[in-house]
Amino acid sequence: MVHGIVREDLSEGEAEPLARAVRQVLAAADPGRPSDSRLWPRYAELIPHLATSGVLTSSNPRIQNFLLHCLRYLILAGEYRTCLRLSEETDLIWRALLGEDHPKVRELSYQYGEALRNLGLFRRAETLTRARADRLAGERGDRDLETLRATSSYGGVLLCIARFEPAREIFEHCLATYRELLGEDDSTTLAAQNNLAATYRLLGRYQDAYDLDLDTLRRRERVLRTHHISTLSSGIACAMGLRLMGRYHEAQTRQEQGVKINTQVLGLEHPQTLRAEHNLGMCLRRSGDIPGAGLRLRTVWERATRVFGADYPWTLMVASDYATYLREYGDVGEARRISEDVVRGYQSQLGLAHPYSIGTVGNL
Image (cartoon, rainbow, N blue to C red; front, top):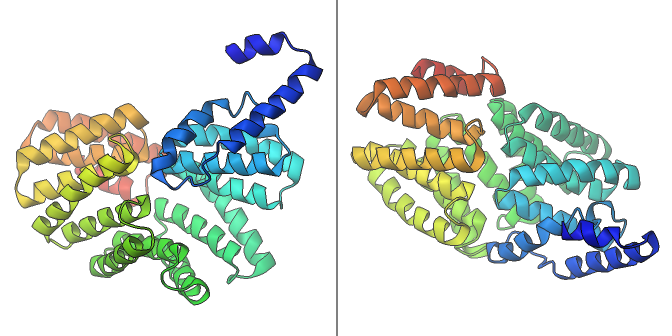
């Protein structure tokens, strides 16, 4: 509102130099490290000014880099809808301004694709990531670092749409190539190792997944330190692996500590904190704390619904697990009602043949 009032009183000749100054001030305030959660409050202060100051339409490379940092922050902080809105607007502008092959347009597409994937818009994400990966592979070959990044992004979407074997092939190739090109301790290599472990877990290869996750955790603790968001994510993955292998008390102990640290570092409503709490609820159920499990699962489901919406993909997963809990230990009528909503949500997003759709129909 203030921007609108001030802008109305200025001529075009007066407004543009002032807007340019505002953009420079914003870019100068960029902390430059969107992956550092300690700096997220600063990014949160900058985000509301991007559109009105003309950051999205700027041709200044410094301003464009600042915008890319803001979009990366939004992904890491779980602000997917804001990231998607800004990415959609910027993509149209930058393609006209810079051309489709410009490095900044490609960089923007990674944040755009992640926002689509995290919001459950899997078909759009698949189209975007596959086109980018195919194009780079054709131009640069499958051992180029940019090609590997694009291919990994596509592999992440394949996991979401249950094409697990093609994803496994992609991630095994990416991990082997990254190890050769960058070394075993590089953060990019460790991200590829994390992706392969997640794929093994979805394929039921729990021991293989756990071995990779544990190695990733130890290396990330050394390379990125213990409170980095990626290190904390590896801790959750290890706890999930222990639970899936039946080592329930070990899983619970590890996950209880993980919930505390994720809450402290990322906040109570962050997607990763909610993921840690969900896994803790599953651990509690398996280790025999039935009331504690029910309370934890319901709380996580209610918070996920409030923060992300009832049809958000991850909310549906938590709802499904809570409904299964209610079927065994609580209100069968409520379990049925929740299950019907989950089935509708999964079938509309993923289709009838997706394993999640099939599984939730079985639950219902």
